[in-house]
Length: 205
Figure 1: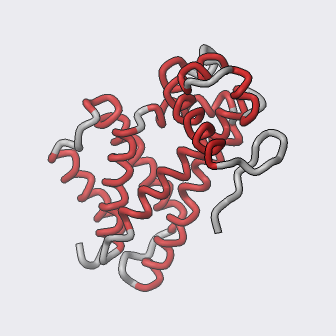
Figure 2: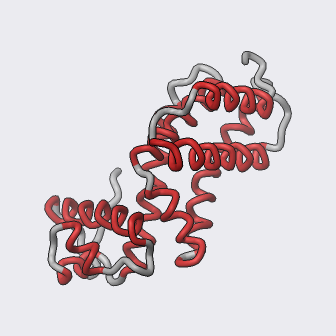
């Protein structure tokens, strides 16, 4: 069952309303990513979305409200991309590699993700925690199951999940965000595969 999305008055949005809300979130990603939270404004987000400032307030009651929803939106989308990618793997190790690849592709398409999440540390610390908690939740469970089944080594699934998340984030920042948004260089990908294999102690790697 799909989630019912409401306007600021608590009424369900129509198809047209959902489209406008989507445009506002896409515009917010662009504006917050380019200008930063403090230099961004409701007017600039509305202009980028092609709507009047008054229309903005039908969907979000403040700049912080759309910022928080943008973090939730990007989080949902990156988790969906990673889940779709990793689900194609036949083993936990393959799933890891496919999930990382999906994450890097999403990052290349949404380079503002890094800047927005880092802004959250100061603008909305609760959303920063939300982002990483949501990323890690299913990840920890999947690693725990693979470890218990003997497919990978005996490990602390929570520690391993957060370590792997950090690995992906830092490599993505260095070679995707600070690179040319192209696929990872072969030497980087090969080393990443080696590191993941070592962490997992994957039996089939």
